[in-house]
Structures are given as C-alpha cells and as structure tokens.
Image 1: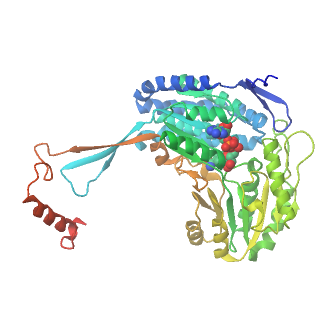
Image 2: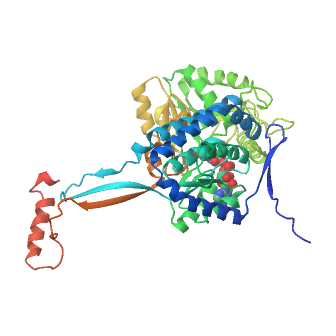
Length: 505
Ligand code: NAD
C-alpha cells in the first residue's frame, strides 16, 4: 500500500464559517533553503544602503499599509475571524506605530555608542552595530500581520534580510502584506516568505540563518531554542502568557471593569497578553464581579466577515476549541461555578461562549495552563500580599495588570510582580508602544522585541578599542618581563584597588 502523498498546498478556511478563503503552496525543504540563499545573496547590498534610505522605505510601507487598511481588516476577518475593530487595532494601529518609530528613530538607535573607559585613559572604546545577515521570523496565527511584520520591519531597517514563516493557519495576510513591503522598495529577495507547518519552520532554522525571532507556544519555543543552541545562533523567544489582573480594594471599579472586559475577551482571548486570571480583593468582589458578568453576557459573538457589529469572533481552529473546552470542564469538575457561558456553540465555526468562572482554586488547570480562549477565571483574595503571591505563582511571566487609584501603590505592587511588563490601570496596549520592550520572563520567553534594545539586538554589537596616544610605543605589562617590575606592578595594584586611593574606585 503506498503512503498518501503529502498535500502540496495550504488551504485556508474561515474559522467563523468554514468557507475556503484562499490557499498557498507549501514550501518544500529545497524551497526554504533556496529562499534563505536568495536572502543571503541580496542582504549585503541592502545593508550597504544608507540607513536613512531604509528608514524612508519603512515610512513608505506605513503609507501603503494605511491606504490598504480596509483590505487588511477584511482579510483578518475572513482568515482569522477578527472583529473589524480588532483588525484595525491589532493589524493596523500596532504595526503602523512600529513602522513609524523605527522608520524615524533607527539611525539614532544604531549610532555607534562610545564607552568611557574607567582606567586606561590612553585608549578609547565604542560599540558599533552591524546587521546579523539573514533573520528568520517564525510567527503564530493570532496577530499575523503585527507579529510577522513588526519583527521584519526592525530586522530590515537594521540592514538584515528576513525570511518569514507565517503560521499554517494565517498565510494569506502575510503574503498580502509582503507585497506592500516589496512595493515600497524592499528588494523581494530581502523579504522572503516560506509556507508550511512546523517542519518548514524547523528547516528554516536549519538553513544557515543568523538569528531567529520566534513567537509561539512554550513547547515549540523550547524546540526552537534547542535548535538555535545547537547552531549557536541567537534567538528571541516570545512565548505564552498567563496574565493576572489584580483588582485591588482601592481600584477605580469602572475603569477596571472595562479594562478586564477588553483584556479578557479581545480576539476571543487569543492574545498572549490576555487576562487569564482575575484576582479580586474580597473587599470589592461583590461590587465588581456581578457587574463584570453582566457585561460579559452582553458581548456579541459572530462572523466579523458578515457584520461589523461583532465583539467576539471564533477561536482559530478545532484544536484550540478543544483546549478551551477541556480547561473549562476540568474547572467545573473541580468545583468552579459557571457565571456565564461555559460551552461551545453549535453550528459552523469554532465559537466558544464568553465565559466567567467563579470559585476557582489553584488545583484547577484553568489557572495554571495557558487557555487562549474567551474565559476569565476569577479568584477572591485577601489583600495585596496574597494577590502578589498568586500573581507570581505561575510558571509564565509575560504581562500583568494592577488596578488601583493610588499611583504610588500601583508602581510598588507592579515592581513586585515577576513579568516582562506590568501595566497599572491598563491592559495589552504596551504591545503598540514601540519604544518599550516586549518580552517575557520565566517560561514566557527569552530576550525581547520592540524598543531601542530590541533593534540593537537585530545587529551584532561589535566592540572597537583604539589608541588615542599613538606616540606611546609600549605598554607597561608587555615583554620583556623583568624581575624589578613585579614589585612595581604589585604596588600599582595596591594603589589602584587598595584602601589608600579612593579616587580610582
Ligand atoms: P505554535 O508554537 O504552535 O506555532 C508558532 C509557529 O511555529 C508556527 O508558525 C508553527 O508552524 C511554527 N512551528 C511549529 N513547530 C515548529 C518547529 N519545530 N520549529 C520551528 N517552527 C515551528 O504557536 P501558535 O499556536 O501558532 O501560537 C499560539 C501561542 O503563541 C500561544 O502560546 C501564545 O501565547 C503565543 N504568543 C506569544 C506572543 C508573545 O508576544 N509572547 C504573541 C503571540 C502569541
């Protein structure tokens, strides 16, 4: 019996209604290697262009994305099930902000950095930034434009070529946006896209790229890290989250309510920064939670490609639906109360009702594992110390949110939470603040993207140390060694590092 031939195309179906949205060819291993080879060949000429030219191209991309927003939003609704409002914000506003920041600031950020030398004042040092070469960008499906092209914009402006491997669930928007980059003036070989499943991503890492920027699950992130370790190439890993929202006893309950609603249910909860644990101080629990439940019940679920009046779209696929269902069932079996929602919706599409779970305990998987669905589990806690401890109990540490009217308290609590970013009285929005770092601690990832540091990390930081007293023929410690120099060197070290001379310390 002959084995079934592997499919040669990715057929994309709407997660809202099952209709075919489009298809792309699956890249073979040879295709992936050829894309990397083309990118490698094209990169030196791209890097040789003045950085100002690359910045202008980024700003031109911004212009094209802005003019094309309606198409991007419509495709996000069809391919990804995103409500149009979210298509605009997530796939429009956030990338536009990244293009603007790095299109305006890259030259300043990548200027050589002098390092003042403490002791050897007859020499000088500086760091200069050289593009790494070919950067692989491996992206998930939940923000297919923002995540694939945010990283690409940074890598490109720094002078790298990129090869993008979008998620197998959202290749169409990547294909579409790539055309805008090429139209804006990025050489097509400097922005290659390869399509396929996980094996295409693995082949890409194995194809001689110089850096990997990976966004996806913790499990895949570990495999990517192992492959990069084997090849000794740097990787940035942007992985899962389990963001807690702490509603303190002095929170502005109205603001907290609307923030939790949006932070828990935007993109049907399929955001790495989604509120995945709601920790409410028992003093405000009764005034807060029932109102939240009322607002969740009022959210309108539907197919965003058919109507603009949709607050929540579907989950991305059957697997995601089953994960959410399993976590809710486990919680209910262990004693959680379903305040609203709690089950999948019959009919076409992968819809799960917006859900709030009460009486949740730490034994339940719903507060320990990433859910990535429209489910907010609520815990009633007693005071700040208990809330901070619960926030920190997770193995994930991407985002956390603190709600309080007291600004000083907000920052003090924020500083005690071990997460890449803690926002006070807001949710998720720092993803669009291009100048701030985006990255997780603990199992949520390694390194960060966005920010000046994130851009510099797209480059090799090379150190040059040079002489500023060229007439000095010889250093004290060079050959030939001489017995009488030993006590002299010894005295010098005492002088420098002993208690006698404070001015050198
Ligand atoms: P995933 O790990 O299943 O897939 C991510 C990408 O990796 C896909 O393109 C996939 O094809 C590819 N891939 C799979 N196996 C691979 C391998 N062995 N080698 C190389 N590439 C491989 O993740 P997903 O389901 O697409 O995305 C959801 C996850 O992404 C969630 O955990 C979410 O929290 C996380 N995420 C994190 C951030 C962040 O900024 N930290 C942002 C968005 C999503």
